[in-house]
Length: 216
Image 1 (cartoon, rainbow, N blue to C red):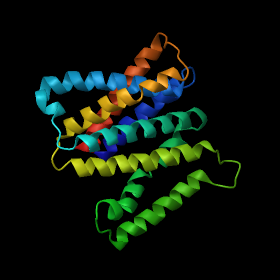
Image 2: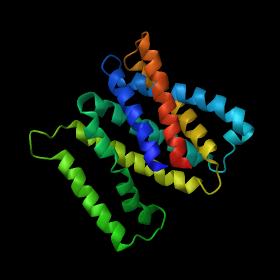
Image 3: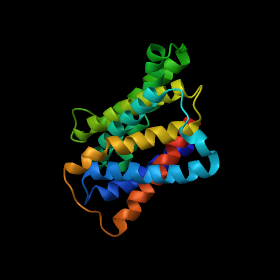
Image 4: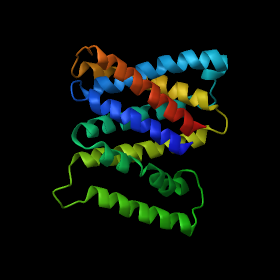
């Protein structure tokens, strides 16, 4: 599931990389969540009916939505300046952050093998960042922030997953993300043109499908 989810996130990042060349990142974030909400509402109501919005953790679901808006904005700004291979490699560190934070936030026990994997994983991230060299770019801090925020989102997803269905988690995080990202449209208001609408729709579909797989 996670491999498929990150494959879909690669499609999302590629769409965002294309869009932020001509559109403000805030608009791309808002468009991604607007289209994502439409897709989820149509498919969710067709398949799951009212179960789509049933939740026992409304506040946590809204917090998940806020975290995703932050993570998405940081990532979309980063892809404007970095190569997709760089942002993807840094974002792939989010499971390492989950492993690092789970004992603190979920009370989980982490064995020495997982700690060893975390250490080697972060060494790999440092190889990508290469601080102190010409290859380092300040936008890499944005990708790191996106990875950490995504990890917090994933931890909350596990927290609510015991009682809320995956479709409910997806609906609330995406719909609240659409609402919370609306103020970003006022930063640099422009109107998408022609094919940009198709890429916004692709970003919404791939992002929502990826997060559904993460919630499963």
